[in-house]
Amino acid sequence: MEIYSDKFGRVIWLTVNPTEIRVDLQDLNPDYEYERCATVSDVAAVSKALNCDFDKVESRLLKLLKNQMTAFDLFTEFLDNKEIYFDYYSG
Image 1 (cartoon, helix red, strand yellow):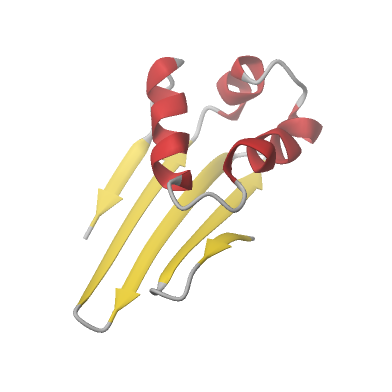
Image 2: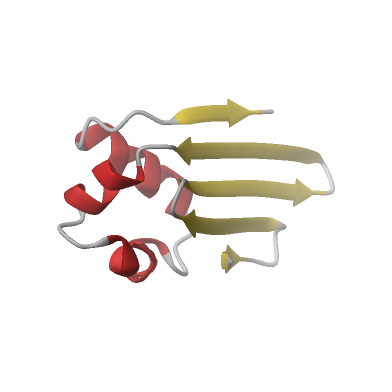
């Protein structure tokens, strides 16, 4: 689901399912294009870090990230602080 977008071309999506949690960022500015992606396979670790069952993970992450221009960075900093491994892509 889209959790942030602005008039400058930045869009951020959050995907939560039982096997992975993923945040995608895309900047589509006329002068440059940029993508980043952070994917967590250890959904249980995220649930534990958020102190909730899986069924509440999405709503808790939305409280932290929705409508935040820096949602991608907030998500990866949260994972780093909780020592949760994630795959990272930038291009």
